[in-house]
Amino acid sequence: MRIFDVFNGDADGICALHQLRLAEPAEAELVTGVKRDIGLLARVPAGKGDRVTVLDVSLDRNRAALLEMLERGVQLRYFDHHYAGEIPRHPLLEAHIDTARGVCTSLLVNRYLGGRFRAWAVVAAFGDNLDRSARELAAGLGLPQTDLENLRVLGQGLNYNAYGETEADLVMPPAALYRTLDRYPDPLQFIEREPVCARLDAARRADMAAARAVPARWSEGSAVMHELPDAPWARRVGGSYANALAAEAPGKAVAMLVPGSAGGYVVSVRSPAGTALGADDLCRGFPGGGGRRDAGGIDRLPESALEDFRRRFAEAFA
Image 1 (cartoon, one colour):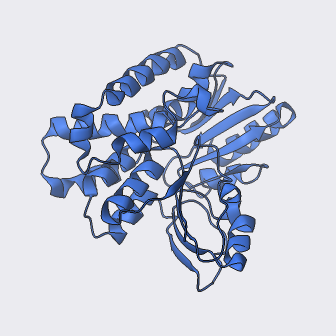
Image 2 (image 1 turned 180 degrees about the vertical axis):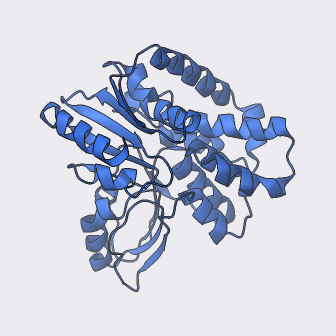
């Protein structure tokens, strides 16, 4: 029997897997990539009797590969908070999916494990721009404010590291980053002992400063659209910058566009709370789009579709 761990390379995916493997150690083959690398299940060579754990990866975007695995007799356990569509009913599928606002995959794993490694779920929630959920979960840990701030910075750094068109854009490949932290039950020890934490924070700060120097492309009412240049730093920081703008102005909707190497744009969308339409609803209206209510994205928006996107974005949120 082979074991595969399939996870999104951002803070939420890494911390979700880390919690699970601290509780249930196993020698597993890792399948991951940059944040936008969503179709991961198709890369898993699992057969009858093998076990696959999937974390923070859209079921809807991996439906065909999932159904094929179940037909082959693969046992699957699935944790996620993105739009899933209809969840298949199958004796080999154990699904833990919750798409409510304020929830991320690491919070689902924390719930599943009864809070055994809660601090890592706090890191993930901060990284996923769920500050309120992170602080509520951290309340029972009794941490001083300096430690809580360190967890927030770590979450932001782990999440920042996942954005890029390829792993060459990243500070560190997600699988290697996971392997660096997988022996630390306490994230504060990880921060203290591993120099990669400071590297990620310094790189994120430098890229954020460059992004803030670029003026918005378009703004109307409570909706604003930014376009960053075609550069590795822009591909790295686009999602983090969108999170920062959403946190600074919770009543505004944010669209972040970064040119892709194959043409068009990689798009990140952050929707304000209380809107009827979620970011995922808007993004699913375009090929390669999806996400969750608070944060969605489009893998490649053609240049020809940009005005249509701007119009729909304005209608939804302006």
